[in-house]
Picture (cartoon, rainbow, N blue to C red):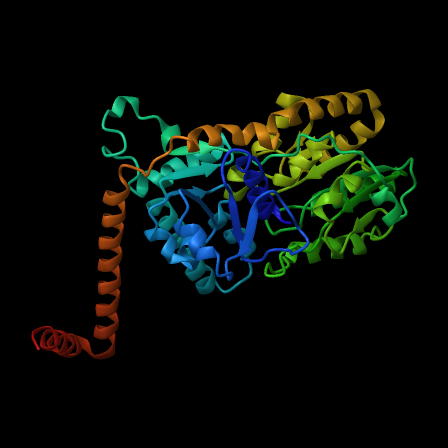
Length: 431
């Protein structure tokens, strides 16, 4: 499973201890079984389940794909943990500018629809809360209907922070999955990249740093344990090809830089991570970085891995504060070399990072971070500004559509075309 699916399943697990939960997704693996019922959105049970629900949590383009959900009487909760427009801006680099612009507008429209129709919202961090609060303000969700007493407008009534989480069960190494698969000696030092290689990531700088260390005679390896996406509908990013090409050019591929051309099973990932010494993540300086929540970083914490990562995102900025690893600057090859060499030379520091990582991980147990949502769901109601905001949105959308249609008619034949279009419309009305 990729991050969005993992999040849905784990939240559902906790909620199912207190409520009757049903999970619907584009695809359901028949081999997966949980304590709650599941079905695909193509299943005949999907609509009846949704129509009988008291609370519906949606993610991504669910409202656009299944518009009947917008008319449901249930309380609607939108999970905004993944800022898709920011990701698309990075992932679409190299495409035709008009295509990128059109798709960006479409994604913004899909998102705007969620901001209007949902009664409550979820995000993954304080940084994201500030980001989405601005968007919600522009969508009209800060208003007198929701908060008549403006001086006591509690933001948590509108949006809740629910980070990505991890299991409370401690992982146990059952096999040396990583070193055996890539034939890495047990006493060599191993860095692991635990997620995919998407366009907003920078695997190139760590690869170059490894090359410099290897050139100095250091026995250090970098393993990318998943370079294709588990969702077949997600197109492979160019950054993956660039990383593979660079490792090959530097003579590292298959020797000191290794790529797992597939995807590690969710329930087996700990056997790869626990077989490494350090978890790493590297990214560029852009809007996606600032508001991201690197879900695979939590797997590092779960396994007690010390971390080396680029600063700028939630975890990168927390490394020094929580004493779980080392943060480096954007695309700073020298800093990567220095950081890797430091943890290779100082086993005491490595052990300290390991202990602090395990302690920090306890804050992110799924049952702990979802519990406030349980409390909120026990009393949650439809938003008091639901009718007001939706009516305004529909009126504005209708006006935009009308103006767009008039422009098309005018472009096809000028003022005369507009006159005849109006005449035909009037004739139908009074017929």
